[in-house]
Every structure is written in structure tokens, then in C-alpha cells.
Length: 190
Image (cartoon, rainbow, N blue to C red; front, side, top):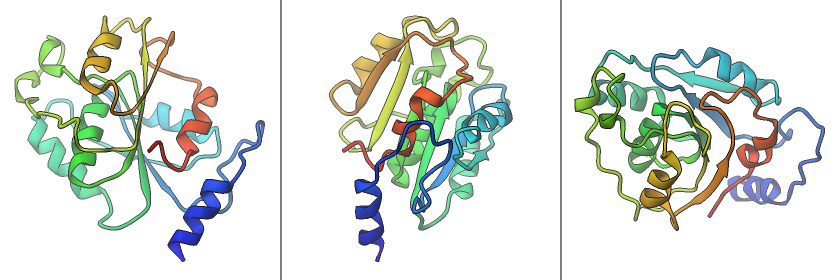
């Protein structure tokens, strides 16, 4: 039954201009916000596309391990789900996907938080990503990011050849996700 549903999802055609997820899409979508954010505004912007998304919250003042364990506890044991994340939320999303597989759509990821002075608990971010673990992942990284400067090269160095990477000209905080809708709804990037 699940395989049949996945096959239907793979064959579906997403018509441009339809502002909702396909009716047979059983995927649950989660959003992990960036540093010093609640994720509420970004989740609303994603939901304008007709994609229902649940925000997975974390505390910017807490250490990495505490936040990681809390986020892990918020994810379902078994389910067809996808994580959308931005900025420092991408760090958590990738770490979570290495433990509990999920597809990822990442926007302007911060994979080196220990190098940014504004992150108060930066010393606790010492998780070592394993690029050899195959995760269906699309990364949109901006060459015009005003917060994470020179991020394109960092992302390509870490995950180039292991996932889909698209260089954009967005500001750090993305407000219009319409051009990313097809990628968010896509069944898999493998």
C-alpha cells in the first residue's frame, strides 16, 4: 500500500499555479528555524503554498546536545516526513537526518556555527557530519547572503557531489518560497 502511494506521488504532475500540495501527498512537513527565531513567519510563508508545516522549536540559548535531543523527541518514530530548515536549523536538520532518516530541503544553511560570534553557545556545536551517509537533500545557498558570507564554497566543500546544491541570489531570510515549491514537494532527490 505505501509503495503504491509512493509510486503515485512519483508520477504526479504538479501544475504550476496550484497553491496546494497534491491530495495524495501523505508526507508530513516539519520546519526547523534558524538562530534567534521562532519560525512562525517562515512557516506562514511556506503554508501560503498550501503546504501544511509544523515548526520544530529549539532554544538559541541552550547548547547543541540539549536542542538536538529535544528536536529528536519531537519527530515521529515512523512516518513519511520531510524537514525544511533554514540557517542554523539546517545544522540540526542534517544531524537529525543522520540519526532518523528524512528528506531535507535546506535554505542558506549554517554548517559551521562555531565560527560565528553572535551564536552564544557556538562552542557546543561540534557535531561532525558524515557526508558519506546518503540523505536525500536539496540545498539552496545564496551568494548574496548578508549573514553567512562566503557560504557557497563552504557548503560545496562539505556536501558537493553528495546532494543537489543550487546557488541563489536570495537574502539570508527567504520570504517567498514559490520558486522552491516543486523541490519541497518532490518525492525524492536520490
